[in-house]
Length: 112
Image (cartoon, rainbow, N blue to C red; front, side, top):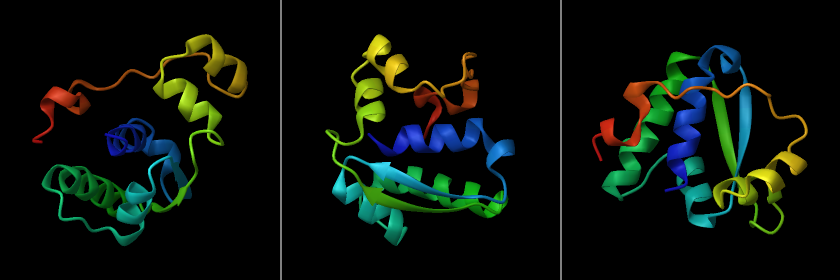
C-alpha cells in the first residue's frame, strides 16, 4: 500500500516537517486523487488517510499529491523494488544514517 510509507515518513520526521508544505509524487493515480480529496470509501486506506490528516493538523503541515509514473519517479521506484545500490546511486542527497521506525508505527500495530 503506497500510503503507508507516506504516513511513516511524516511521523518519523515530524519535527523537521512542521509548518511546511510538501507535494507527494505517487506512482498510483488513484492514490494521488485520494490524497488530494482527503476522502476515500476504502476502509483500510481511510485509516491511513485519517492518520495523515491528523498528523498534518497537529504539526501545521500541508500537502498535495501529484501522479508521477514509476518510470519518471526513479528514486521511489528503485527503493520500492529493494534495488539498494541503484537507489543509492540515484539518491546522492540521501542521509547516510538510517532513521529507525518507532515500534508503534510498524505495520503490525496499525488497526487495518
